Image (spheres, rainbow over the protein chains, first blue to last red):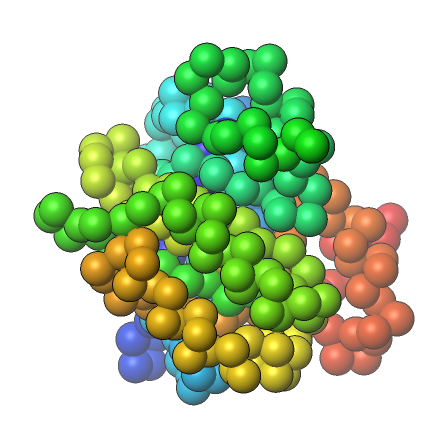
Length: 133
Length: 133
C-alpha cells in the first residue's frame, strides 16, 4: 500500500478554507479516483512539536492506494481539474510526497501484515517475525 | 484526536535505517507513551507527486493521541531518551507538527464521527449533516 501526502506549507497570513477542503475538495478527489482511493485522512495544522502555533503545514491530506500505478492511473487524468480547485481554498502550493506504508496502524498491525503475506511473499521488506508469533 | 507528524527531510546521501526505525525506535516511543498513544503509522518516502525519487521526506511517522495535553504529558518526560535515539538511525533532524485530526479515515468516517458526538457536542467543527442521515 502507498500513501500520497499532500502538505500545504504555512506562512504568515496564509489563506486556507478548511471547511471547503473537507466538504468539497477531498470529496472531489474521492469521486474522481473512485475505488483506487481506499480512503483518505485530513489533518488541520495546530502547532509545532512544542505546542507553539503555527506548525510547518496549515493542512495535510493523505491518500491511501494499493500502488503507485493505481494512484497515477486514477488521479492523473483528473489532475488538471483537481489542481485547478486548489485556488478555491488556499493561496499556497502543496508539497506532494509518495510513501510506502510500512505500518498502516500499529494497533491492528498483525492483522494487516497477515493479510499482506500472500501478496508480498518473497519481496516484502517486512520481517515475518514482527507479526507472527 | 490529534496527530503528531514526525517528518525526516531527505537530502543527498541521507543516512536512514528504516529497519531500526520500525523495529526499535517506534516500539521505544510506544513503550514510553503507553496508553496515551492510541496507535502510530510509519511511512517510507519513495518519490514526489510525479513519481520521481526521492520525495521531500525520507521517512515519517504519525502518532495518534486523544489530545495535545495527553501527548505532551506522556511524551515529554521521555523526550530526552527518545530524541537521543534518533542518531542511531539517521543523520537528519525531523520536523515535528501537531495537527487536529479532521478526518481519521474516510472509509469509516461516520462511525468515528458518531462516537465523537458525546464528547464534542457544542464545540465540534464537524457538521453533523456530514455523518448523520
